[in-house]
Amino acid sequence: MAASHTAVDHDRPMGGNREFCLGHLMNTLISALTNPRDALAQGKLLGPGVALTVVLAMAAQFLSNHYGAPVMLMAILLGIPFHFLSEHETTGPGISYAAKGLLRIGVALLGLRVSLDMVRQIGWSFVLVIALCVAFVILASVFLSRVVGKDRAFGFLTGGSVAICGASAAMAISSILPQRDTAERDLSFTVISVTAFSTLAMVLYPIVADALGLNAHEAGLFLGGTIHDVAQVVGAGYSVSDETGDIATVVKLIRVTMLAPVVLIGALVMRRHAPTGTSRPPLLPGFVGAFLILAALNSFHLVPEAVSAPAATLSRALLVTAVAAVGMKTSLAKLADVGGTAIALLAVQTAVLAGLVLAPLLFGLL
Image (cartoon, rainbow, N blue to C red; front, side):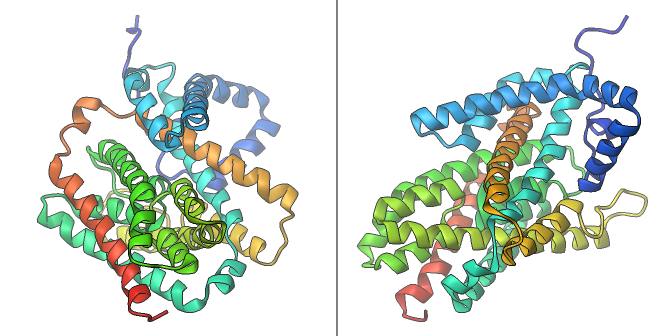
């Protein structure tokens, strides 16, 4: 008889493998309609683990709503103590599915939060500045990661999370990286660290903006262009003024649009350099294609508010659930092995991004 705590293969197809895309979701729905018995078996396999991640996500959201704690940070910290459940034959497959499958659906739905109207509102010149900042931070991070003894994948992961949209970017980028023994540890470290830095920036950056004499518009550009997570951008922006909050939120969402091209380019690079005989990410990851399609539909006002608003809420919920699942798949002992140099790397990335965004504002180039 099998032991009650049996290790499971977390990358089996039903459990949410690396190649999961929205096409897989459609196939699952079609299969459910044509073969209910198989659908029921799939539900029994994944249900317990997914249910656990949903409960943890709800707990994280409760703590965020009532105590102001960053929801992503709460989700991963609540998940880590339940790591043993990710190795249990009953809950392991569902936890793996939530960490990868639900993540990609959540990222795809982020497309409904962005549109070309945002670009026109901020101006193409600052959008170009943001794009250059994102590219520079990521490339510099890939180089610096080698200096501190980490691999290039770690630099891409941390640099992308700092430059684009924090935990959400880390989750999306992680899904296209090559399989590594340290993948889940590095992802959990990045989510925890980038959320902590984002929270610190939410408190300090408005003080910096005031000390530098930035007006409401400039402060919005600075806060939206530098703080890592959307929630912290909103908190920092509206703590200054309504105008600053509005501008900061729009700028932040423009940074979110950079996620699709960065993941796409990253996937292309990974395919090119993947060792012979190993699995490679798809040419166009399904969730990236869905993100772009939804963003295009939203730009042409083809998605009614009655659809886009609930979809945005669902996207957030799925991402929080995925982060909770990542926490459950993370060993605290292995997380401690990352080292102080990795924290220093994120601090440098954060400082570089702030400097790059501030420079054109202080020298009147915008």
